[in-house]
Each structure stands twice: as structure tokens, then as C-alpha cells.
Image 1: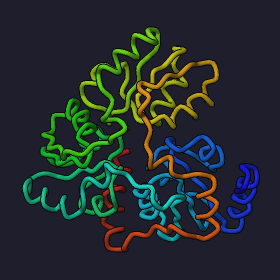
Image 2: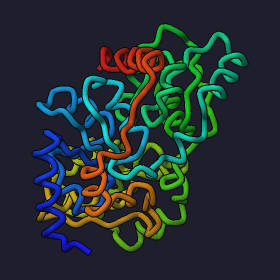
Image 3: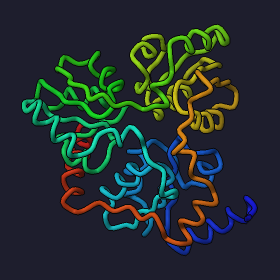
Image 4: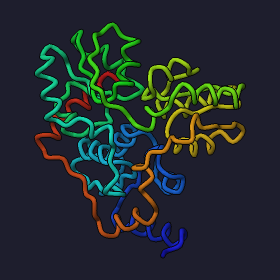
Length: 303
């Protein structure tokens, strides 16, 4: 088995050979985040990839994220660092299932969370992120919105808009499993800490938080906050950049179950093997890509 140093050397050599850029989601393991050219949330990474001088994008994340990169950068080769890394929430709805829901609600415009497959994006009017969901929904020229696939993010948006929201019953298991009792326990353990949760959490958990933010918003919030202690209600991978960027502050997980097993499938060894074998290429059929790109671009146009 290669040592960590040998794997890092091998990855660096392969990156040069492939003229590649390595990008990693905020939920990846620390060693993957540290070897990446840049880190961020899924859309942020896909957008940054459009401006890089590279022939190959190595995406350390899950499948829908690599698809989004392929939608926005069709001229580049996109490789998913771990081919089996998927997203259970994204898989909770297919394009065919969405077509059925559209027939049930013919007057509704579909807004899909960017955490969705290319096929679902192609059947949607616009995408949104956890950070801009309210802004996107308010910008849609329709008073009725069919929101897929995350019911918790959809509910969070519904509390801040006058639009009628129809919520598909999908969820992120990492955030959905957090319960109010765990919030109570964390508050008792860390009474001086600020509680920050992701809007993918249940409404009853969101209601107890001091701030409800996307991963990128969490990073910015903590960096500019005068507070010194934080309870974090999202996937535990975010602790790594939080601690790196804020050495004088302390961070505590809201619960000990905030781990996405798919995100953690990527290792230095699987990354090196993917690059060496040029495997796990992610492509999107052109007809679907163009329709999905339109939904992504509608979101980007709003901001």
C-alpha cells in the first residue's frame, strides 16, 4: 500500500500529466480538501471550474456535483474521484417521477435544489442553492412553485416567501436525522456557543437555531463573527475549513451522527487510481445538458 506522501506525489504528477484541476466539496475528508486546488459547495465548485485553465476536472464529491460540472464545462473531461459516491436525496426523485408531479400540478413552476440529477434539472424551470432559494423562488414568474427534492429546504423557503410551495417529500438523511432533543443537549453542553444549522435540517430544528446558513455562508459568518464558540449543524467535513480559517475559535458538532458516508468514500488512494486509469468519467447527453444548463443559468442570472 502506498504511503500518504507517495500518494500525494503520485497525484501531483498525474495532475500535471492530465492537465487537471482537483476540486473538493466542503464535506470531503481533510486530506482530500487539503490536496484540492480549491474547495467549496457544489455549485461554487462547478462555476469555478468554468474559468480554470485545465483539460480535466477531477471532482471529489458525489455524482450530481460532477454532473453539474459537466453541464457547465462540456468541453472538459470530468472525472468523479470515487465512482460509487452518490446522493440518496438526489436519487429520491427521477426525471420520470418529476414529470408525473408536473402533471399533477400543471400550473406550478418547478424549482429544483441544485442537489439533484441532471435529468431532474432538465425538467425544472430553475435551480436554486441553499443560499439563494428564497431569491430564486421570488424571481420565478409564477405564484405556485413545485419544489424538489428537499422538503426541509423547501419548508425553510416557504416561511420567507408569499409563493404557494408544493414540497416533494425528499430529504438529506444527514441533516434530517438531527432532532430537537440533540439541540437541547448541545445547548446544555455548550451554553455560550452560537448554534448554526443548515436549512436541510427539520423545521423544528431550524426553529431552535441562532442562524440558518448554507455551508459557504457558515464559513463567512464564523469568520466575521465576534463569537468564539459555535455548535455546527451540518456534515462534519465542514469542521476542517472552519478550524483552519478560525484557529482562535472552538467548534462542536450538534450530534455525533452528522456523517455522509458517500462523501467519505473518496480517499487519496481512490483519487490516485481514478486519475491513473482515467475512470469514472461523467457525461450528460446533450439534449438533457442543454435543458439542465438553462435551469442553472436562470438561477445564475438571478444571483
